[in-house]
Image 1 (tube, rainbow, N blue to C red):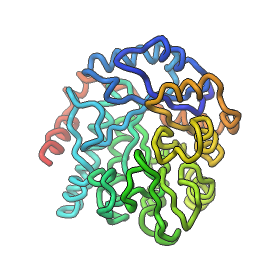
Image 2 (image 1 turned 180 degrees about the horizontal axis):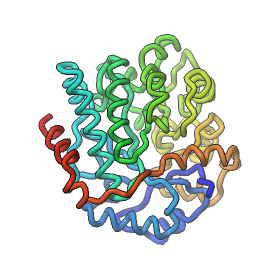
Image 3 (image 1 turned 90 degrees about the horizontal axis):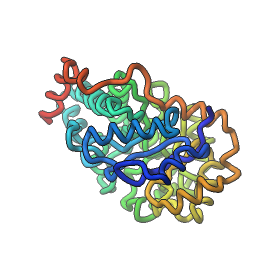
Length: 342
């Protein structure tokens, strides 16, 4: 089946009739979960069973579960350390830091896969320039080569658990101070400066387990007047052609203020798809979600097979993990013990 271009949020702990109707809509190609969808592991697994039974069997289910302060599920899940903690350990002992990064990626992915969640939007590849509060400790380091190596280790751990990865926020959100959830940040550096620093982790990790990329709602004014998420220059010319990336490009949440300059939700979705995004996120505004799925935009019909192929790659792979299996796994238990020491 071809996957539609809209990834949407769900209303609560169980599926409403509106949720079911939207999941079954062919324009919807994926779902994203938040803390509002989580009470405990048992409830979460029942929610996933309901999603799969009501039209979501072949549609990827996503979550932002990076670790640190961005971890949607807490009770019953391992507390994944922030990437800054891992980065600091790597500065003290690179080999140990790389091992911790791999273990953190594995534990995070294994626990999500045990609930039948396909992918976490992780890891963050932004550099920690000391400017951005919204990025801050979500970043490994201000050294792009260190970020590249640690991100590759996280992605390797995720892959061991049958999970693909998403590098974000291309080409880099760490330089700007403003939070794109609340405003439209502007980065005035040159393309050369951005490519040799913030975008370098994308170039170095392109051949690894990075099956998807999320562009930033940031304007890089020396390159394009549009935010990267709506920029054909950034997505097509730079990411796809110059860096050779052929995975899925997924917009950041179109509800964010950084996206509002493109118009209403339909205008935003159309602009992102025209720029080269394969799918767009609409997470929290259910009026917007209704406007998208009930009357899909013409751009949703462009390059359907190519976009669907890229999105299908994001489904979890291998035998589905179980919590009892993880409990009996020495490598999983050893990884939990190690990362809990950070």
